[in-house]
Length: 254
Image (cartoon, rainbow, N blue to C red; front, side):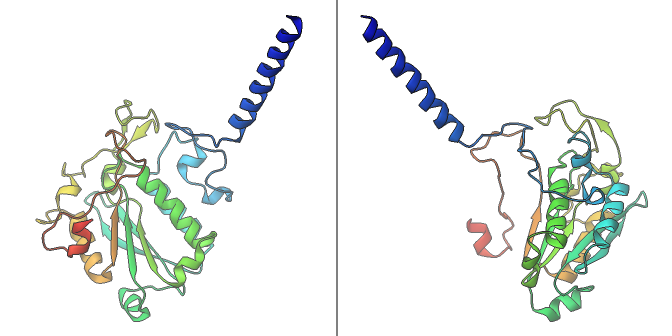
């Protein structure tokens, strides 16, 4: 009996040890606001985004955006900044142009023969994830490991489109699926209009400014970032394709 008990105990201990080893070898799954330490890389303090500096309790306002862009521009020879428009509240909406070699106009972009990609954030300021992610993308393309991408493509990034709504602050109520950031902008612009509904009538300063730049630079790909955490999806990253009948058939068929 004693030998059988000792044998069983040994088997249990061995099994628990093996299970512990297997569990330790499994990659950790991160849920909700949890992220791996150092997942955004190591950067100098002036290139850290506002969320990175505040443990993701704050998001970037327009003044901080201009200061951050100025800091990045000092460290890259491949970066130019254009003005999309000046808002009704006299705030400038910038767009970063990244290319190797640097281009400073739409005509230079056409002469280069390279395709243009346009990435937009904060059309809805409470959905701030795209704006903050696009700053990280700009940083990585301008000074990081992915600079070589700019040899073949011109990337334009407008992190904050709705500049007036971004700087109209409200407190977070947890309705976005997360308690952070604690303070957010509002969905509408200073005229109380949803910029995501102004692609046809073009009644807003913002819509007309974006229309002008898109026509001038003629991007091959346009990305408009939104937040999807309030809707249950089968994938962490969701996307929507074009539903405009006049668009090319390829994207419509996706």
